Length: 144
Image 1 (cartoon, helix red, strand yellow):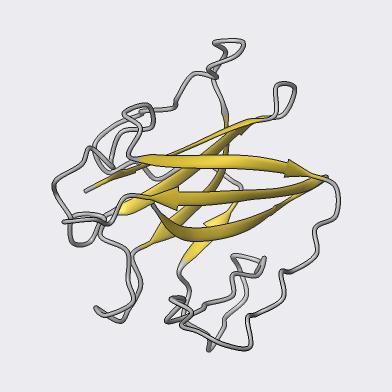
Image 2 (tube, rainbow, N blue to C red):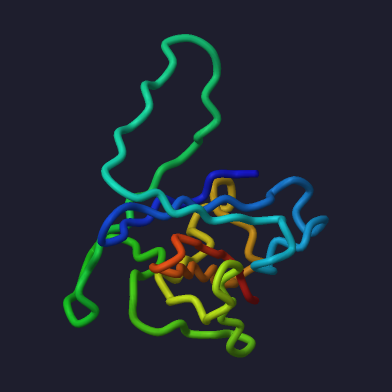
């Protein structure tokens, strides 16, 4: 699985992973098929030390920062935190695997501008991140 995003929460972060092995060969659009996964980490985290030797595979990094929707920016916008999802195909809000209640929308992510480093959401799709605060569960899916 490919590490895709690290998103801030009020009391921790969500880490998002997705299948990018032979794109189209795994059901990575589905929040429950197992081809993608999101994890909630509570409390402060510290970055891992970058190895001094060997190959690292993180080819590109883009920082997502909260930005008020009504103010212009010169930076490329690759998604948004909070609000309501802009569904492409219709509401697919996942249920929490622990309590079965609907999960809270957390972020909407775009593929990215550079083909070599962008995620594969079927060409022009959007990724959706959800979480359940009480249970500490998270989910990720995408639509095109």
